[in-house]
Length: 181
Image 1 (cartoon, rainbow, N blue to C red):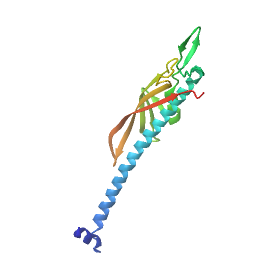
Image 2: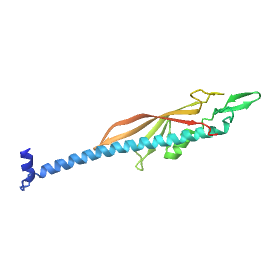
Image 3: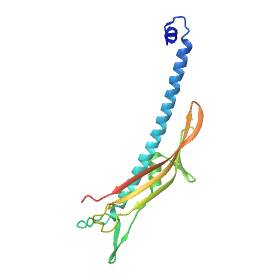
Image 4: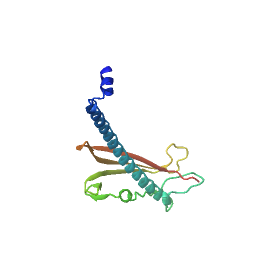
């Protein structure tokens, strides 16, 4: 410890390599942290866009929700003759995500590219599972209209000028509808 203190206090210029090394180490750490934040911001943006698209789809089902005020039903059912039949609308979730994030469709992928044409990120394998509330739910626990969705996200990772393996994650989301009155 005394040696390091002596080198730092020495006025001969021998601490110049140490200053350069510390500066490069701090720069490398900053690059790593900024790449991590870039990945998290992209993942958060895709999650938010998917959540908005799924919520819009759930809200689109509002017009088919049976309004049994007295019984408290909230499922998507339509009266057909003397009975009720399930009526679900899956909407265009990919279309909403594409318009929100500015994505282009390329085969099975929906991708966003930089101005230079490099891949920024891509999504695929959207899966939406809509669970209708049971008819005449009464006191059952799951008495709301719900939509669960998942999508795969891939973001290329580069660090210190090198291309590293891409980050691939599955993003999950749930949205629900319960009539207020």
